[in-house]
Image (tube, rainbow, N blue to C red; front, side):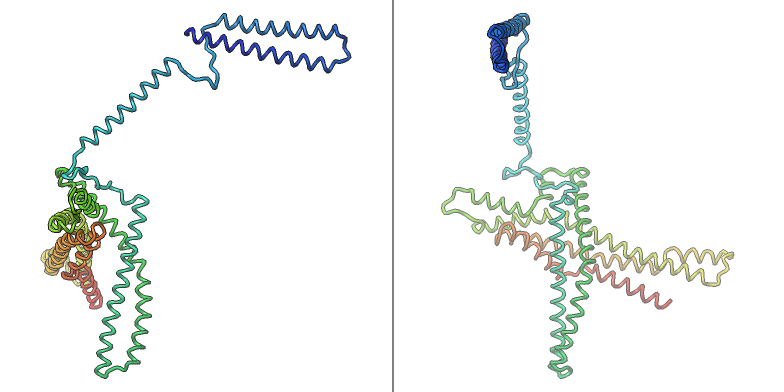
Amino acid sequence: MTASSAASATAAVSTVSTVVARTLNSVSMTATMDRSSSNSSSRDGSRVAAATTTTTIATSVATTAAAAPTVPVVWACSPVDTEEWSTKSTNQRISLQARLETKRNKQHHSPLDADGYPLCQYRKSFFGHLTVKNFITSTIRVTIQQATMVLAAFMSEQMEQDLQRNELVNTGQLTQLEADVTAEAWEKVEWKKRWKMFPMKLATAFTKYHAVTLILRVYEFIAGSIVKVNMVTMDKLTMDPFQKSKRIVDVIEKKNSVPKETVWDHKVYVVSTMTATTFWANLLSFCADYSLHQGLLCYGYYKYYTYQRQRRRLALASADFDFDDADHADENQLSLSIHDDDKVLAKDLMTKSAPLAANRTLGLVCSAIGGGIGSIVWPGWGTIVVSAIGDNIAGAAIDDGYFKAFEILDSKKAKQEQDD
């Protein structure tokens, strides 16, 4: 140890000796007061003995400290200032600075777009939509969307019913009182009926939402890891149109121009840029939505094909055939393979798939155009709202035929069961 450490130890020992001496002196005085009947010679002897004992203890402690001057005395409140601790602290500071510098260099050298933002900044993890925050947000959004659709469908059908009743009243086939009573009865029945089916519709819509999201993540994985598209293209496919419109506003407003420019001063640029951005950002999501509905449509036709095949088997089993005859066996095998009804069913599937593909394609285009227009009206939320309006316009222009296809299959199945 150093000389400073030995000096500190010696000073500490001196302090201890003083404290011990004062303590023994107090004890001696207390004992003297308790034995006040003792003679003075005894008191003097006790004091001398106490002083002798104090001197002996102090001398012993000092001798021990002198014999081992290399052992440092470290108190709980004393600062630690050893060479080892100083070296360790320095190494930790250097290590922390190195980690921070590495992180800064990594961020500095990460790929950036033309505006200086990191590429693929808004790409989400595979199961990111299942986190607590995103799960609650998606649940609320799907619930509001389905409730709005129920109300819109009810009001639309109510207006149609009112128009039909008004025509009957005008032609004299129905009185106004009868029309009002019929309307009230219809509203009560339909209102309860629609909201009774609401939980099932909500569960179906919620399941479809997460299924489409998972398919979207699969497509993103295929594009990034299997097809290996470049970072710029991947950034376009995973871009958030809401944030992109905000970026454009920031870039325009940061220009030192007098007077200050806004998005209205760059309408052509904003519309063209946001239309392309919304198109690329919605491309995979529309493909995922189409894939889900096309898969469900194929599954529905497959179930109907299985039902028809089962009916043919039952018909052949109930017929009086001699299966030992080779000709009859061949006829049986042929009837269970490809049938004319199967060809008609496959052709009908292709016919029903075409409107679905056309609906999704037109929806993608109209959604992109709506995103560009909405970015001029209200950058951010206007992009989302007008883009959704464009998708709805496409849905109204071209019916996807998805639900009608299932209704036709169900009606055919019911008719065949009735014939049997």
